[in-house]
Amino acid sequence: MKIKNDSWATKFINLLGWFVLLLGIYSTIRTTFNTLYYKQYPAHPVIGFGSYPQFDEECYEQNVYPLYDPAGQVRKPTAEEERIRSENINNCLKKLERVREQTKTNDRWTSFMLVFLGGGILYTKRFYIKES
Image (cartoon, rainbow, N blue to C red; front, side, top):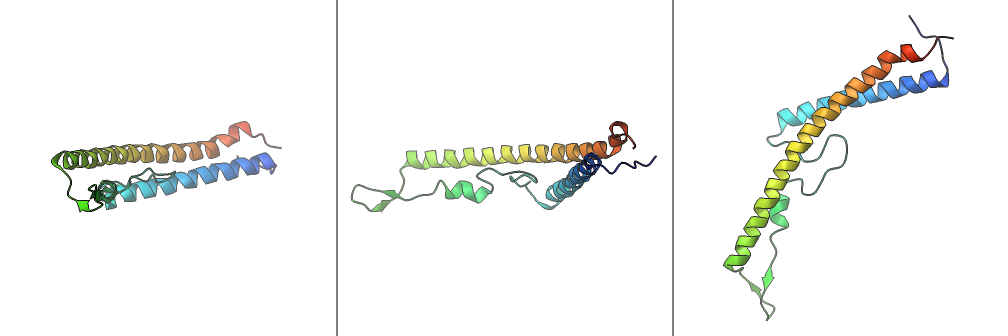
């Protein structure tokens, strides 16, 4: 049964349904690509904003800085400072791994939700938009 109603509501619902469905298909393709192509899943989500740090190198960069003695000369870190720096790097890498796993899970569920929601909007519009 074809819907003959060309009202603004029908056009808006069609636009919304197709937009959400296409966005879901895009995010599904990107999520699949990220899962298969990259050795480690990226920390930046397919749809949305990422967090800092996003790469392993950033954990090392933010924890490597020169230390100065009272005379203003660069000095080597003490054993305690080196231990703290090493702990900070390990904590950052663990956090980054947790963020990657969470991003991977969120991307999969977002893709599923958008495809389901877009298809649902397009399928169910026949039940709540009456023919004129």
